[in-house]
Amino acid sequence: MNKHLLLATLLLILVSITACQTSIKRPIASAIFSNGTIYTAGTSIKTAEALAIADGKIVFIGDKRTANQLIGPQTRIVDLNGGMLLPGLIDAHLHPVRGAIKELYHCNFPFTSSPQDIQNTVAKCVSDQADSDWIIGGQWDSAFFDRFEIASPRELLDEVSMDKVVFLQDDSLHNAWVNSRALEIAGINRNTPDPEGGTIMRDANGEPNGVLLETAAIAMGEFRQRYSADQQQAAVKKFVRDANAFGLTGAKAASSHSYEIAAIQAVDLQHALTLHMGTSMRTPDGKRSQTLDYQAFEKARDKYSSPHLDTRFIKIFLDGVPTPARTAAMLAPYIDDDSHAHGFDGGELLVDPQTLTRDLIEFDKRGFTVKMHAAGDRSVRLGLDAIEAARSVNGNSGLRHELAHAGYISKQDIPRFKELNAVADLSPILWHPSPIMDAIFSAVGKKRGQYYFPVRDLIDAGANLLAGSDWPAVSINANPWVGIESLVSRQDPRGNIAEALWPEQAITLAEAIRIYSIDGAHAIRKEAITGSLETGKSADFIVLQENLFEIPLNRISEVLPVQTWFEGRLVYQRDD
Image 1 (cartoon, rainbow, N blue to C red):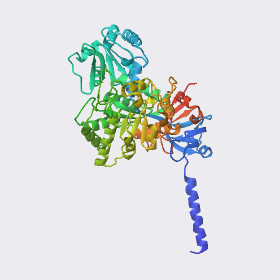
Image 2: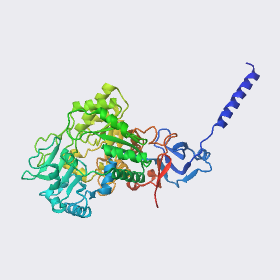
Image 3: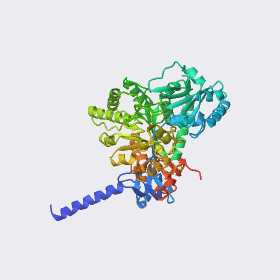
Image 4: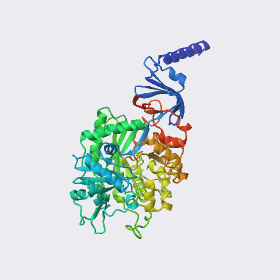
């Protein structure tokens, strides 16, 4: 080829490239955000000057000059005024319908209530709810009956309940306190045996005293008043409003009945679910040795799936809680007390290892992510063993099965989380001195009990993590900022107690945000579309008045968004 022909060819190529570039139509942004810190929680860039959105997605993130080229006649320009924009947060473990039902319809009192406070509250609810046969509410704290000596808890409620049924749950939602009328309709009397995996507490004469633990409480709950479909949907809508106000754009219901899932789906089909949601379908409660009906769960998965609702999740209970109820399965015995003396064996597993292994293999094969309630180190080990068996049979499916409330983990099991692509599902609301921690210490002992939630060790070992409020269990609401602060400080975010719980396990603010953003997106199987600010992802983010990295740590729990955006729509605006 002579040089004239070569030059002509190169010129033609250059003209063609230029023509292609000029023909590319840049998107016109519906909104552009700048003049603050844009924190991506992504892997490519950590912060940016500007973010542009269009058609519900992020179309640009980077420098302000380039972003301004996307401005059109209708583009909304949002000045961050030195504040911060970051991905919407995700609560990966809570009970949204139950929590909102509680706030809307229950007889409520704080965890700090005394017996007299509770009796007064129940008396008022009996008066106010004249048309109701049931008084449902709570929550009393896990150590309540250790702190207060009550001759007959049942009779204390009988004094003010008239002819109504009273059903009060504790802070863990695993145990109940009921009156005589409740025991009567459930057919519980002095001759009723304890159910497997539960206890009917009794007085000195052998009569049920009104306190029901684990499966005994669950059985009582089967008689409980139900709420209408309209009430369930009203509860979902309340949760969505409150969640968006806290800065949540994603959530995972940890253990859902079919009627709760139906309510969430109905709200989604009404175009009112401004959250990405996953729901873990509840498996039968109590002790079992039979495998589950896998096809029934597949049918329910397909029946309730909707645009913003992912139903490919299962919840299995392996044990209870490590409180004075002593129902979490532990590797070492609980300390002795009047009810559990000499050689009490460390709780009880609700599912035998062989049954759990078969369940995990089948659910993994069928594409379900399994969340296992595992509050004790023994149940955590059992859960990991079952995941290991599923990996051996099915190979690595990529499904990230979860161990929920994995507060106590044996050191030798920590590396297994990474090896098995398993997830430690954590509850930051517990990672500081509090009444529920005192209750746990009373059962396992302070020396052993303080080594709770080894978060730093898990991160250093490369484990997958997620976090949730577990609302309405323990926490008073689904506020994620309380959990974020306690992850970093290991102290009580509300300042009631100054000391820290195992402060060596504190993590950085950046790590805490990651757990509540992209890690949470993995938990609801939406990491490809949300959880970080990246071009092409859903425009799900929040705007804060201040930069989280520039304010004192003890103020993070007080943070609330100025705005929350979901799929490019402003779904919450704070009134100042």
